[in-house]
Image (tube, rainbow, N blue to C red; front, side, top):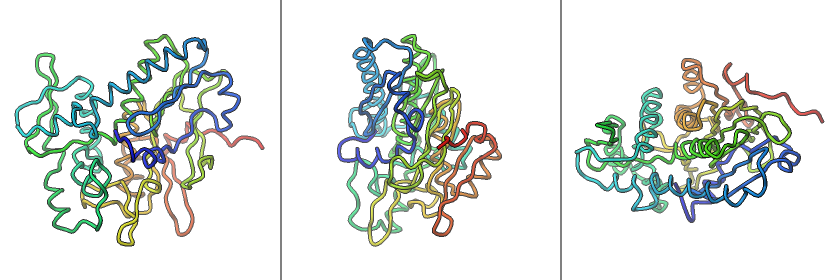
Length: 348
């Protein structure tokens, strides 16, 4: 949902490389479309589709993503979400079914992560300079953090369905909902539905760090996605997975940050403390049946930190891959469910 100057920062969070790591052969046999949306990049790769459909598909994808942005953006003052955030009443506010669906999933994951994934954390995100507001010139003090925290809380938000109409309701007038933590996954799922509507059964679609696949690539093999190592080298591969028709999303803390008062300020904010995370977990990747589900879980796991994330992944039987700092090196951990998607290293 970010635009303008935030493009580079958010795009740097794309930790997954589309298609197989070599990419060259697959891309010569697949139709690849790319563009920009929500302050990041989108990518669609389809197999078995006539190249003459390129222009029409490009237009359809961009129109779909633009429509999503008009609903979910916190950067557009006239978006559906921004208008709800500006609303100061407590009566149910009518929203689209899309908005109700994404908030419902986010609230559920928020509860399952004990509040670590909190879509009402917007005031804290803005306070620390990762929302529409500018970066602070000095570290927010305890009073500022407490004031922002007082405006957050999942318990203050609910989804209501009444006579076929969806509503959001808040009992805290200044509650500010930020869906940027799940927007990429939601938009990716939308692109998958668009491909199905277009009669396309073999595709890889991605928005930012969220990816979803169906069928096979141009070589007749499953679509593969590379999880990048926590470095600034775009082609440094940590692991490769075959999604087998699933969605995947990665959240990382080592690229989207700034320095303030001699401290590295991460974009991942812990709702419990009101401050950027400080622990050793640097990347959390989740595979789920939808990209939205994966996108919601990866944020919550990043907030929890390595050990709590492991425990939650095992308890909920999630397909999770964690990269964390161990001394001067990086170490990794995967849940049993994730190991089923791992591909063996390519032969040299």
